[in-house]
Length: 311
Image 1 (cartoon, rainbow, N blue to C red):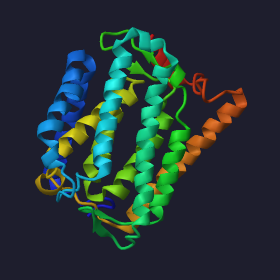
Image 2 (tube, rainbow, N blue to C red):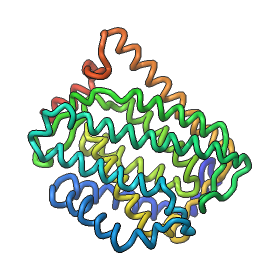
Image 3 (cartoon, helix red, strand yellow):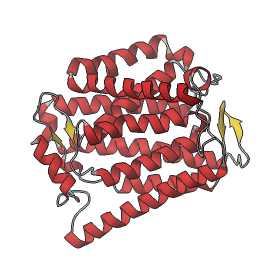
Image 4 (tube, rainbow, N blue to C red):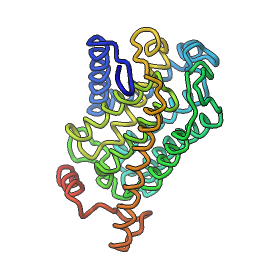
């Protein structure tokens, strides 16, 4: 028995690895070809919306995919993926300050939605854990801690004015100021959010899904983390909305439901985001920067490397 999960042996790890590879491969398919992106994030979801999701994600279904949050998250993730494609492939948008603000806006909106859900779970007062809307949840101080961590993560989004399009064939949306420190703080917060709010689904929606966008951001296409995140999130949610029994029946990885695990995940997320906020505030004060206009990390090695690789 692990601290966070009871992974069912080698078979469970093999399935998780297969999901990870599939998400990364589909992300690459959508990233490297415009028609691939349109197929995955426009044509496919239109068909699913009409013919599949009204049944598999109907309100009150036994797998918990019919709640408001799943539907909102699905379309906000798709809006992000399609919006980023528009910026990548429509030259006039690449110099439009309002268009460049869209990635920051949709990212902040997605984080804020999750913060609201964390706070909502706290109001359920399920202190000993209970099934609510067909999902097992446990309310606690961790919901408040992680909600605050998420709000700090929103505040520390910076440097969107410096978003650029890579000069290679894939035309990726590159955000140089989104360096590793922010990505790790986000990952820790998002893992804690999934553990708090979709506990028994969080192994896939938290651990595997976060790896599927963080690995490409560090090793395949640096600087394009948000593009990777929007694509893999949209892909995963579409899959779960279509095959909701996957995480509960086909390949379940149950959480330990240990209050200490909830507390640890949210505490680490809060500490990481406080540290990021303090570091960012220090750089703003030291260099007299405007966080709404200026790039904060332009003097760092990761920033310079991303710009050099994509200019």
